[in-house]
Amino acid sequence: MSSTQTDTSGQPMRATIEYDNGKTLMAQGPQALHDHVASRMEKALGRALPQMEVRFKDVSISADIVVKDETDIK
Image (cartoon, rainbow, N blue to C red; front, side, top):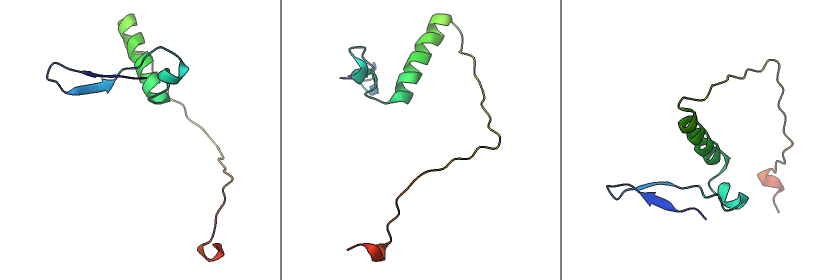
């Protein structure tokens, strides 16, 4: 799985992402993987990645949820 590195002061740094398989890549979640890949790409390119802003107009979001009233609990 993932291992934790320590810096020169002996303090633990963030866990490393390993490339063994998909499970180890996703062990820390999609945001950690994205940040890892983006930081490596920025170092390789020598510049920051371009940023994009996304805006929505007239968006409707719905969700199907189950609600149980405390009086209905048996």
